[in-house]
Length: 250
Ligand SMILES: Nc1ncnc2c1ncn2[C@@H]1O[C@H](COP(=O)(O)OP(=O)(O)OP(=O)(O)O)[C@@H](O)[C@H]1O
Ligand SMILES: [Mg+2]
Image 1 (cartoon, rainbow, N blue to C red):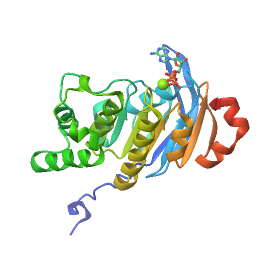
Image 2 (image 1 turned 30 degrees about the horizontal axis):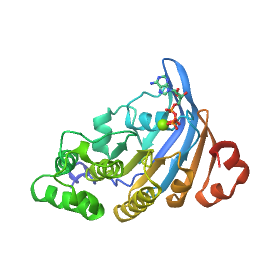
Image 3 (image 1 turned 60 degrees about the horizontal axis):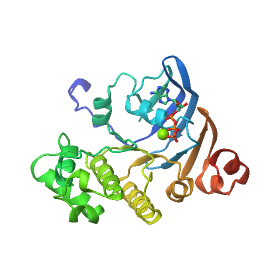
């Protein structure tokens, strides 16, 4: 038997992310200046920094919503540059943007099914939807409510559920705690941590809510004016008073 007739091995979709010397700007003015850091498969990494540090820009570059001026972003060794946003999603990159990403006119159930559309069909889709309702019980109770009828916390759960149902390998979230009450944030972060662990997800969590983010993260990367100023285990970052005062505001 010739090697040409051997079946192509299924690639392992482990979710290792490597960002190397990434420079991104708007209209020629750089906002990220040669940013480099990596995420190991299954790792939860908090992306921290003050307003305007470049967190959203980095997540947008990851999702292919803004092009890199130079440098690379690789998922499991594959450069993402040639892939459009939708192809990155199929490759396993899910971005939960800040603000309202649920469809206001559709019900909770319809929003979830929309997220599952190209990943699951038939019975598998039903199982995937049930899995999200098990994860977020408040959503199960509101499955017939329209997106615009949900509370901020419920909307954020739905946005997260809609991303998870597509079974990403890499989940990037932009400030999921924004505008939520502390108890709701704690619940959301706990669910995120559990979902990441049970599904083997790699998570990049951009947050202004440093304490919450570091409470569930393995590691933190701190950006300041588009440059990485710290990359360390979460506990070390939380304990570093100088760094906290200088870049994290607490
Ligand atoms: N569409 C855009 N056009 C031009 N400049 C932009 C655009 N979006 C962001 N910027 C600029 O890029 C810089 C980084 O913004 P970015 O939104 O990435 O920061 P951030 O860390 O997410 O901040 P925040 O914590 O406030 O969300 C800021 O100076 C911002 O003004
Ligand atoms: Mg932002």
